[in-house]
Length: 215
Image (cartoon, rainbow, N blue to C red; front, side):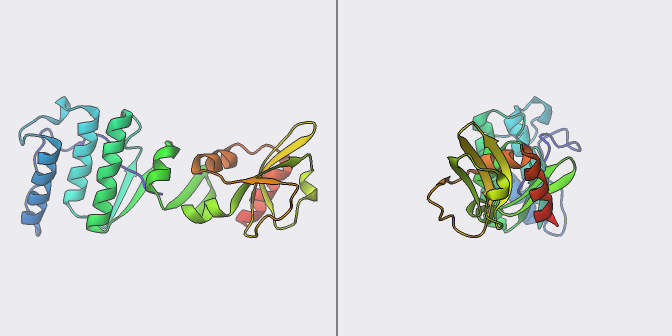
């Protein structure tokens, strides 16, 4: 996944570009350009900035050191939608420009869908799902059809979630093979649907199947 850091930097009382170092000239130039883009003055107090500006400032200071890896934890959880979109846009531009990797921890699944290319899903302190996001979406399907017990499904289908009415069954399954059975209506999943299915499995046989896949 790709995820982002805390809103306000803890070691700086003012919005000042990072100090000198081996790459001081480039670092200061990057920071000043970013501050200008954000409309921040060099002596402006970070504590008086808006939540969105503080998040952008924290990201700017982190990027100014030109790291190979950024680890960011719930950076946009307290931001309004516009500030969140601007922060993520800045983050994605930086990953392309500086060729850095970002580990982003977030509960906002809609943001992950727009920014992340690799997903790791944790539940109860355990990894429930991991892999390239596009691959995970391509191998999970929602199936709707006449009521059918899970043990009657093909052996290669791993049940993630199951719901039943008197006449109808709805499964979310993981399979590498295409679904050809005309009895099923197959619909694609979004990332939020996929994550919620793993977090909210229903049938007991579903839980066993997920554990078998992980082994």
